[in-house]
Structures are given as structure tokens and as C-alpha cells.
Image (cartoon, rainbow, N blue to C red; front, side, top):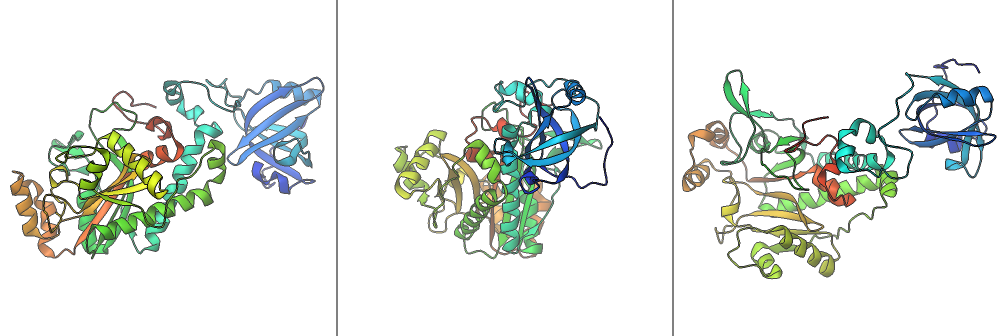
Amino acid sequence: MQQSVLQSRTRTLAAELPSRAGDDVVLRGWVHRRRRLASVTFVVLRDRTGLAQIVVREPEAVALIEEYAEETVVEVTGKAVANPQAPGGVEVVDPTFTLLSEPAETPPVELWRPAVNTGLPTLLDSAPVTLRHPVVRAPFEITAASVAGFRDTLSSLAFTEIQTPKIVASATESGANVFEIDYFGRPAYLAQSPQFYKQTLVGVFERVFEVGPVFRAEPHDTVRHLAEYVSLDGELGFISDHRDVMDVVSQVVRGMLEAVRERAPEAVERLGLTLPKLPEEIPVLHFSEALRLVGAPPDEPDLAPAHERAIGDWALREHGSDFAFVTGYPMVKRPFYTHPQPDDPRWSNSFDLIFRGMELVTGGQRLHRYTDYVAALESRSQSVEAYASYLDTFRYGMPPHGGFAFGLERWTARLTGAENIRQVTLFPRDLHRLTP
């Protein structure tokens, strides 16, 4: 059997085969599965778009295929012919195989099976290989589509994308658990939020957004927390109050869902997902109303996970919505830069977006006057000097502004119904995991 790499030939992807019946084609990908029958061997090739079936009849070719373990990278030239029983209704016959790498070793899991029936530790330990499985990979296709929707929506609203430092001189919030590093002999920290910088840049661009990593040195060992995750942040100036920010969040969520529908339909189908219900207006509860709804004491300072689940149930039952806003969280539970509710300063002009019973987005209106920042820090017995470079921004004229942030991995976990956020994190970092 001839073995030559026809690099001058245009590659055909698996998803394109249905339109190529009767043509000579060149496929390149991984040997996904081999099935040897009495008179014929079937090779299933996998590329980024799907699977292609190749029919091998010549004894020489069959013997060669026996030497190629699953995940061997090959090129296949042959003729595409119609066959209703093949994936996409077309298969490749009279193939010529060419190795594009060394024959692969046997993978730690059988990627050709419909599902990867192994524990999460094995999935994560062997991530460079297990991520190749179409079902394991699907959440990350949804993540990519979601980020594209996030960017597209905010860009259409005249936001400017920014990139802020991830090595900072101080914590964004007093008392926050941060990772300290040695920065040329002096202490510095991995940023747990781009908050200060995105506020500063409202004074430059008016509307900004960022997609980037954040770091939380919090010793959580739960199914919903990570030490490093991707944060989707937005900040906008010249607002009336936090409700303007909520309106942008609603548009962003709608845009992200639409991007998933348009850009990742195969991944949605592979996972058997039903995308969430988003009404024209997301239902809104004030924090005090939320406490009454869930039967919590009126002086409760925050919502527990059980409360969030109850609010999620209420939103779906009463409003047909997988989302609900809770506004007016107590000022004692919000950062010092949060703007208080003007008619009752016990409450804040802030909000959380609950998605399928879990807090997803946190946002609100910020303080924008220098004197208000000084008063807020002093009221909390915090040092004004510690935030000097940040506060200088507000000496030189800042508009009323606000913003929001949410974790990308948590979004994908809620979309896909993942039981553990690590299932939708490419290479998770937590209390126990630093590799791969």
C-alpha cells in the first residue's frame, strides 16, 4: 500500500464528508476506534468536527491498521461514498494511511466509548488525553461560545476590552485571602479581582470589560470553589444606579445564551442539554423580600446556598425563569466601595444574579466621590493610606459608575448541570491540585 503525504491536497473535515460523496478526499485526525470483522475492518477517524468511518479491506492495509493504537495521528486518502449506515451517511473507501506521528501508546481511558466511565480524579490526572473525548470536551466548546457571546454583546454596547495586572501591591478587599508572592524582594499578591483597575479605566473609556484569571487563596474544598478561575468583568460609567448595571447583565446573559445556541449546537446536543429560560425581564427581589420568601430571620446578613436554591425554585415556578436578581444586600456584607441605598443606608445599591439556584453574578453601583471613599474606609477602621493609589483616581473626576463580575466556570457548570466545577475547568487549581 502506497504511503505518501499529499500535502498539496485540501484537507476534508469529518463534518464536510456528507457534501463530498463521490469525491477523492484527504482526512487527517486521530484513530478513534478500530473494529475488525471477518471480511472488513472499520476505522473511525476523529477530528475537531466529528467522526468519519473508513472501510479497510486490503489485507496489507488491515495488518498496518493493527499496528496503530487508538489515538494514533494519521492521514487518510480515499474516496467518499454514500452509505446510510455510516456517520453522516458517507464513508471513505480504498484508503491509504500515512502516519503523521509515532504510533500512540494505549490511552488511559477508552475514548471511543460513548461515555468516559471513570472517576473525576482519573479524568483530571489524565486531562491531556481525556479532554479529547467528545463528551468531556463539549463543556469547553460551550465555554468558548459563552466567552464569544460575552465579548460580542459588550462590544456592541461600546465597551472597550482591557487587560489588567495580575500582580498587585495590595488586596482588593481588606481581609481577603490572597496569594502572596516575592516580587523582586518585596511582597506582592496575585489579584483576586480587577476591581480597582476596571473602575480606574471607566475614567478613561467610560465602559470596559475583561476576561481574565483571578486568584482566591480561600481554603475551600467544595464542588463550587476554585483557587484560580476565569472572571468575566464589566464596568460602566454615567449610570443612574445599580439598575442600569442589571440591565447590561441581562443583555450579556441573553447574548451568551444566543452564542451557545449558534456556535455550539453540537456540544449542546452531545450533552443532551436544555438551555435555560430567560424571560424578557428577569424577576427581582429586594434582599429583605428574599429573606421573607425563604423564611430566614430579618437580620440575616447574607443568603445561604439553601436560600439561593429556594429563590431559584420561586423564579422558575412563579416567573418561568431560571434567573432571578436579588438586590439591596446589607452594606455590612458588601465591599467598602459599594454605594449605599440612598433612602436607607443599611442596604446597598448592589445585586446578585441567581442562576438555577446558585449565585452567579455579583455587581452594583460604586462610590465615585473621593470624600465618600475616605468616609467609608474610616467607618470600617481601614487605612486610607493603604489604598492611596486607588483613591487618587477619584480626586480627578469620576462619573457615577458600577459593574459586575461572574465566574466563567460556574456559568458553564450551571449550564451543563455539572455536579463539580472541576468537570468544566480545563486544568483546575484547588487545595490539592497543581498539575497537570
